[in-house]
Image 1 (tube, rainbow, N blue to C red):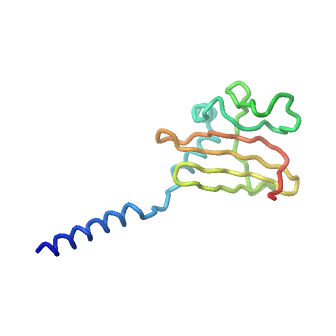
Image 2 (cartoon, helix red, strand yellow):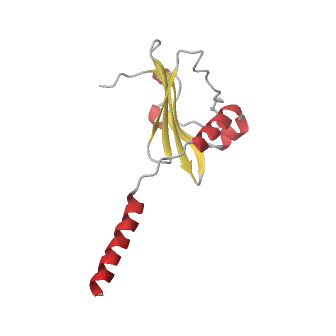
Length: 141
């Protein structure tokens, strides 16, 4: 009887560990709905940005201050609007890091310019947490 009990306990522990270790496929439909609303609704947009936000301004090489101190604020923010990727040369790429961090890169290889946004799920809601404006792309070394 003792052997059955310890075997049973071991099976239960293995089952629990199996469920704990399984990776679940993230459902990004919630993010997609958020993203569409973010691009369409200016009030919603500013409510879902973590100001002051780190990043870089457009054409950072021409920025006159110390870029390490640059922050996006409600005062210097320009509303983001959707890009029609079917009608432009821009290419959009999303990289997901877990269920709560998404990095978006938008680039035009012909012109050599691109931008980057980082999105995070904070307190159950998606927010923009980092933004690099339109700048020359750096080739990966």
